[in-house]
Amino acid sequence: MSNIFARATSINHDFIRRLIKPGDRAVDATVGNGHDTLFLANLVGNAGKVYGFDIQKKAIEKIKILLSEHNLANRVSLILDGHENIEKHVQHSVKAIMFNLGYLPGGEHGIITREETTIIALKKSLSLLTSDGVLSVVVYSGHQGGEREKQAVEVFFKAIPKSEFHVVKIHHLNRLESSPCIILAQRNN
Ligand SMILES: C[S@@+](CC[C@H](N)C(=O)[O-])C[C@H]1O[C@@H](n2cnc3c(N)ncnc32)[C@H](O)[C@@H]1O
Image (cartoon, rainbow, N blue to C red):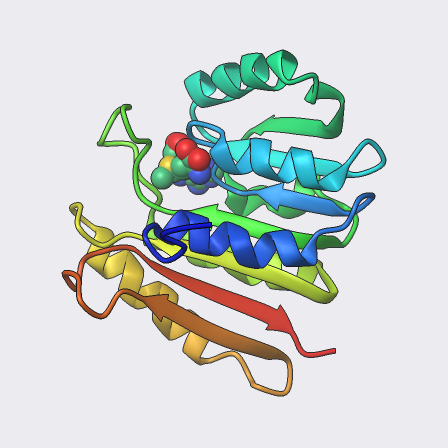
């Protein structure tokens, strides 16, 4: 495999791929164009389950079609609701929860994830993870409001006790400060 560090999203996928086994449950907290939902649906197998959240009907409709085309619709529950309400829809513990913050590429740039709801959702997500479960967040700060959200997300993760979670941040050092970074937290079992 070449260029393994080129894209934040693919670095993130490499970590999640190592963790998820057939039969696991996972959450895509920001479906968007559906790349992460599709990725997770392939990993969990027929016995597993993926929950996909987005507040945009357009995103949910798009992934519905994509999943049917890949014959994966039976593995995914799509939820047209904010991830800040995650506990209303996900009652079991899950192996991984993925967030990809910011706006939908190719969509309405005014519809973005917001600091207030993101932090509520991250807090709730931690409590839903299995004993070795991972929470992953790809953070963008180049758009309006993005820097504020990034700072809030970092404050949130820095405050998690190390006895409970291992938390790492991955960032391209030779790119702009506003280039996407990844934050991963794994429960310390
Ligand atoms: C950067 S995009 C996600 C990209 C996606 N992972 C992909 O593979 O294309 C962010 C998405 O989060 C959604 N979003 C914004 N606020 C949300 C919320 N409170 N709950 C769930 N989704 C939200 C937006 O509608 C948008 O589709």
